[in-house]
Length: 253
Image (cartoon, rainbow, N blue to C red; front, side, top):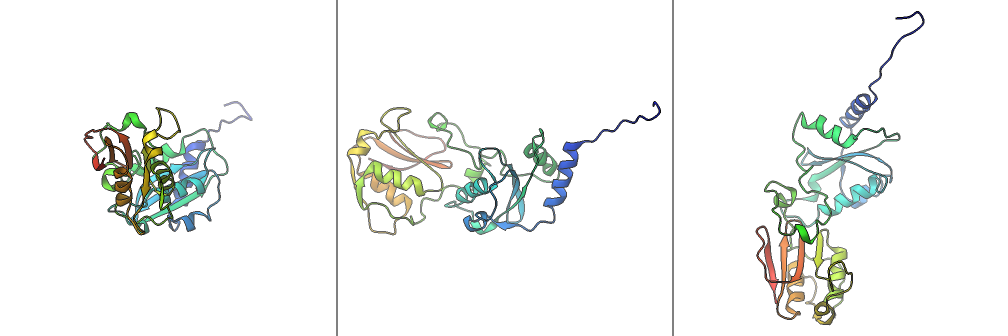
C-alpha cells in the first residue's frame, strides 16, 4: 500500500446485531401486561416475546408504532385464548436510537433461529384481520390461532346496553374483544349497518354472560338466514349458510 494510506472496513450491521444479542441475553423479562407495557417509552426499537421462558417472537417497531403501542397490541392479543395463560408470556425490549438500513427483525430472527425455532413468527400471531377474501383459506395447523384458539366462554367484563339494536351491541362488543369481530355491512366496503342488524332489537341476559351467550342472543334476534362463525383468530357474522373447513358455527337464525 502507498505510504500514509490504509483501508478499513467496518461491518456495521453485524456489529449492531452482535451488540443487540449481547444486550438481550442478560436482561430480565417483564410481564406482558397492560400495566407493565404502559411504562415502556413509545420509541423505535426491537423486542422479544417469551412463552414459559422460551423465545417465541421477535419484532421491530416502525415509524407508525413504537414499542409501547406494539407491545400493548400483543398484550391485548394473548387474552381470551384457550391453552394460553397470559402470566406465562413475558417480553424484553430495547430502544434503538439509530436505525441503519438493515432489517433488524429479519436478521435477529435468523440469528436466533440458528439456535431454536422462533415459533410465533410467521404463524399468524399479531396479524391484522385478513378480510372477507381470506375467510375460506386454510389455517396453518401449527399456527398461533390453531394452538391457542379464541375462547368464547370467557365472561364479558364490560358494560353493554341492556337493550339496543343488534348493530349497536355488536359495535360495543367489538371494541372490547381482544380479537376480530366482523359483521356484514350495508354493502361491501361500507361502514353503514346492514338493515337487519339496524332493525333488530337485542335484549341481553343479565351479566355476567360469556361471549358465546351474547353472540347467540344477537343472532337469535335477527331474521332467518344469519350465521355466526368462529374462524381462526376471529368471529364473523354474515347473512349466509356456509360451511368453513376450519370454522365452527356458533349460532344461526
